Image (cartoon, rainbow, N blue to C red):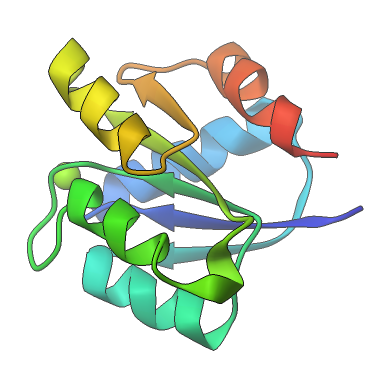
Length: 124
Ligand SMILES: [Mg+2]
C-alpha cells in the first residue's frame, strides 16, 4: 500500500538531501511533505496524519525531541512511525527519544542503504 512521508528539518537543503536519499533507497512513497520545525510539523500532522516521519533533532521553535512527545499525544498519529535523523548520536539522546516514542534513529551522514534498512520494516 502506498505510504505517506513527512520530512522535518530546519535546513531546506537537508530536506532535499533526505528526499533524494529516500528516492535513491527505492522506497516508494505516494506523497511526501516537508516541515521546517516541530510547530510546522504538528500543524501538518493535525491536518492529515502520515505513515512515516523523518525528523531532525536540532530545530528552532520546537526541537525534534519535543516534537516526538507532542506527536505521541495525538490519537490520529498513534501509528505514525518516527525515525530521527541527526548528526548527534549520543546514547543518552537515542535512548531518551526512543523512550518518548520514536521508532528509529539514523545518524548523519547517511546512505540510501541505511534508509532502506531503517524504513523498510514500516513499509508494509
Ligand atoms: Mg537542524
